[in-house]
Length: 224
Image 1 (cartoon, rainbow, N blue to C red):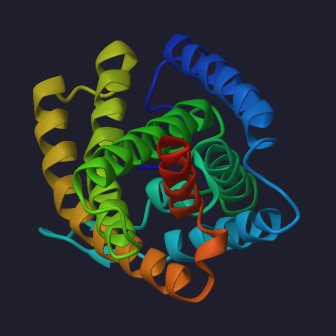
Image 2 (image 1 turned 180 degrees about the horizontal axis):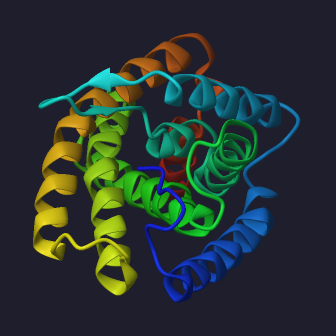
């Protein structure tokens, strides 16, 4: 999912750098309403956890591998605005210190993972949460589904970027099939890790889990 240098042309890289910069700027304002003295440390720990797990690849098929994206996980734990910031920080550190992903393509990678991955995953989480019973047990299930959905959608976002300005010679349809097909499998691992992690946190400190707190606030408003 980390795009290397030279894979996208300059125009496409500039467009998505601008879009990502705008998204991160909006996230900076939105995160103020989601973070407080209790949840700010959790946001930092979430970023560290995602950074560590992204360094660990797991085999998928035909010699390919994947890693935890972390967008849905971060969004459920600390809120989508803070999650966008956390993922962006992780990508910046990986690119500048570990050469994981190209610097010229950093804007495109950020758009796919910090924006599409976070917000599509959180949107799926909210949708599933409305369908399931309003209890704690439903939160990890909804988070797992959000995690699963976020990965192929982030891969699809990359395919759109590829169609806009790829420097490689593979057809867009070939890239679409390979990326989305492989990342559906990666999404299964993403969903499992996301659900288990949220389950562990909500069992010990449910008061810190944004997805659960937000659920309770919605119920209180309805019952008022």
